[in-house]
Length: 147
Image: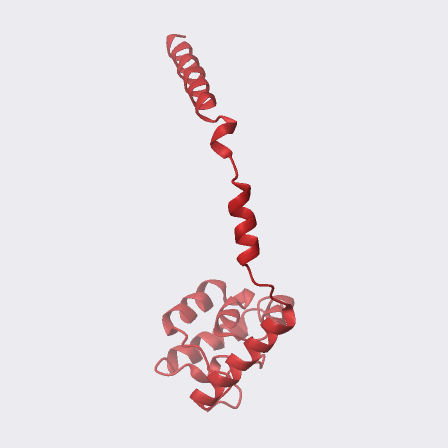
């Protein structure tokens, strides 16, 4: 009973000191600063942002020689995702496939009852040096016609 009474007293003491610290004066907004920030801001339309984004993508494409650069994907991460979450197609999501592909894994009861993720696992292990053919691969059977 003593412990409960001490706990209640400490809780009340903590709440009252915090309530005193949280006064409304601590949250004063300087209207002049807000108006000054709004006056200095620049209006940006969605069309201008889209145009700038398109220009930057074209510039990046001219610098690299392609408009889309494949991201470097880690073999170990793909392997672990396939091993533990292969039936859900999460490894394909990591590798950058289309949404319908990994949804197909789920709808076919884990990729044709687990056969497709198992083959994916074997293919990833065999070609562990270079998994780039499987990155952004939209085929349901990612290994078909790659080698």
